[in-house]
Image (cartoon, rainbow over all chains, first blue to last red):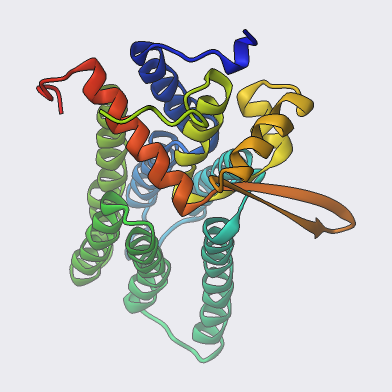
Length: 205
Length: 101
């Protein structure tokens, strides 16, 4: 009999099903451990650099801002490359929804830069600037995580969105210079906790 | 117990159906990516997809992306139901008491 047409035993069938599920997960699903982990490191170290290099009047410095920006860009590159590789060749309603969610990130962050430009050109000054410039992108991350979590029934991502919204709310109330420390611990810590839970789930699967 | 579905209960087609049923967010997949995932020849995969399509378990749709024709493959609701039925049968054959479920 043709090997392909061979009827497997129940144990062989179960092994085939299990192996294919694992392979699909390894080859096509984005690895949450990598994505949450890289953003946890970027937020944790980046915000910590901002906090440690803050100026005498609580203003961020070029060194802190540069380190943070570098880490965010690195995390963004890893995210795009990893997600693109895993999702290549996938389509249908799921693929379309992913494309639209990806576009939502680009549109909202693009709009953020115009809002920043408007804030500065209209003369917004003082410590409040630091609070708002931090809160705006963080709240976008929180909203899009909650939206994606709801769309894909991904409870962990949904909860992480709530956690980030709560973290940025607390950090904003506290204000500079401790705002950055709060974001490093709660925000970065939230991402790393999500990465750890994703790792635990994989080991148990 | 009823007979195992002969369309699914063949080594190669079981691999195809199990993979399509596990797609993230019920996504469809291009023929070349599925071929790479399963490490099957194009001819072999086509043959098995045709049998699954005849049974109503799989749908193939052709589209144009840029200037390139692309074939997407996805499992149908009937295919997913048949696979879930098959999986339940296999599970009860391995563990008739249902102790592990």
